[in-house]
Length: 470
Image 1: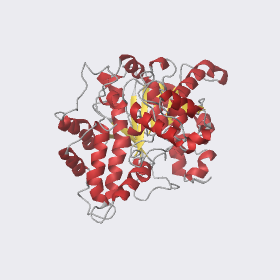
Image 2: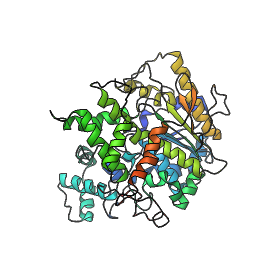
Image 3: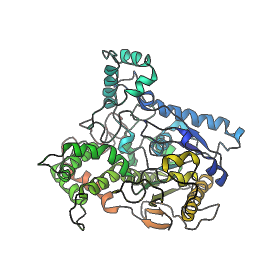
Image 4: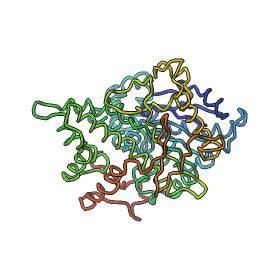
């Protein structure tokens, strides 16, 4: 198992993830990987002077190293699984779509992050603008990208990291500055184009993904942290005596989210989204806008990308490959959860996956003595994960308490993971239909919006969704 840590491609480190408990419990060899982050890992220009994605190349080099050397550590190079959370989960998909990785791993586990998450990709021009802003902050010439890059490479890495946050609050609503981009080499298509319309996937990337088993999932409170640090401060900064927080959410946030996703929107679509995300069974309170923005953010940032990625994989997978999906909903006894976020927050499944290692104890606030049902839940999660690694099926070879059925495009089964395991189907069906059916239909006759066809499917310069504001 090869672990890619999360952190929005900006922060994080492998040392937090002591995998010795998981390794011993499941009898698997685990490699945790560091990769370059922030501008050091993902600085790009609007031409080929700096293509970006250096952090992804670091990961790819680690995959090749494991393939070449893991036998010396008791591992099997023909039975490798990538797994990661958040940006690490998105990385597993990006590595899966890179054709030259074919044969380096057999399965992927994606926890709360796929390549389709809006925070996991950006336009070259957008990141190129941030690169120039970083150069100006560090007194570099931006007359040409070559001069800019030469100057930035001469700076101490501390200066690059300290000054990396160059965007405005509005720039950072949906993604940080330094993320993967379409470089024409490692990433050849915008991820939303790939996963919403998998039939348009470039053939070699589709074939690579189709030959893998996939286990993918999210936490029911995944959107809480990103809402708290990005969307919520922005909304609160816009509140005036005549514009309440709820009004800002109903107008500005819905508009900007739809535009970020589709490149444009209409007043009628904004109204439809606002209507859908209103809880009409509850009276209006001071927290109404918090629950509404959380639902929208969770769907856009996590739920829809995971659901559509699972659907895409199930559509293209070879007959002998499998797709499994989960929703982690257990609210831990030790969780420092945000009061208005229900269930499991972003990253709350991690101690259960890794068997409560001491390296996570301080950050996650759990004690040496844990409730027996949470210890049991961790054992069940580790069993599912390592079973999947060995066989492509989380239900074997080690017996499990609840059989986890495969996800397919008809049933869309998923496992609700908490201390009372249960199988459910069609997660958030109405909201999924809004993002995948209603919104594209309402926009299909609007100027500059188009769905893929044979003329655009393999043209990396013509994204399905025309990002007018990008």
